[in-house]
Image (spheres, helix red, strand yellow):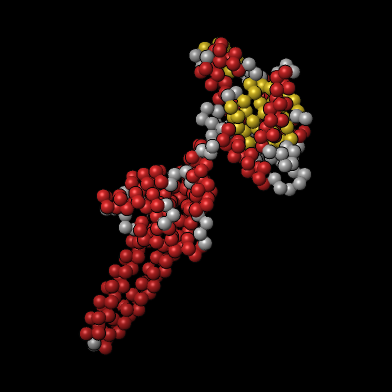
Amino acid sequence: MESFQGVAGKRHQMLYTEPKEKSAEWLRAALAEMARHDAAFHPVTYTVFYEHVAGMNARLSDALLHFCETEGRLSDATVQRLYREHIAGVDDKTMDRISRDFQQVMAGMAETVRRTGDRAGAFGAQLHGLTTALQAEGSPVLQQHVEQALRHSQDMQHSAAALQAQVDASEREIERLRADLQRAREEVFLDSLTRVLNRKGLDHQLDRLLHQSKVPNVSHGLVMLDIDHFKHINDQHGHLVGDQVLAAMGEMLRLTVTDPGYVVARYGGEEFAILLPHATLERTAQLAERVRNQTKAMKLRKRNAPDVVLSITVSAGAALWRGQESANDWLGRADAALYQSKQGGRDRVSLAA
């Protein structure tokens, strides 16, 4: 059975299929609706009103209209609630696209405001020149009408300047929200203890790599690592020391695996993985050996007993990707090679068949 998040992600992938002309129409309608409320102009607010005006989310529309009747002008908190309860679960690609579309609309609005302000300024200058000429000609009635038009032009210029400032502020807020979204996405894929990718992050990287690997004769390397006798460390020294070992392992891997494009992840428990795009089996085995030696050289002192020094080792399995092989099969072969290292006495690297 699929997870709720998976179903919601697919739901939105199917919904946002409208042509550009129709989506532009809904963009304008959504912006007009947003302007009537107090909620800030950011992608979440836009998503709520976009789905409402497009008529693609009946439950959302019912709830939104209910809040309009009870609150009048919708606040940020209400819009966030509508998003969480009726939209949340949208996939990252869709959210990115919505954010980019909204930025384009805001950029277009900003350009329109700038042009309006420039035209108002030019028109005001012409009226000012005409007023001066009329003063010389001595036509007080016509001069009065022109001066009134000049004042309206100046008011329009001031309004355009104020709107420009508001648009600029909204653009800055959108940039901040995009940065927050990126940080949140990174945190979702990060293991908090070791500060390397978690299992979900590794799966994401594997999917991307194998999806892009359409060119024949391209090789990728994978290393699976497991800390030897980790259960004994936990049993003898406690889970806090076990966490200390895992954190130190993560730091060592981050400092050792520095090649551009290479990925380090905590696969689960005391097991780690290293993904090496466009690497040969020889290069993969060399990196596995370097990590094994770096681990063996580590000397860890217990935080509450600095005189106690811990030495750790790792067993590793390395596998080269076979073209058209699934991620699970590839991981399975690397894990089988890791098991060979365990069976062979630990603290060694084995190559997958």
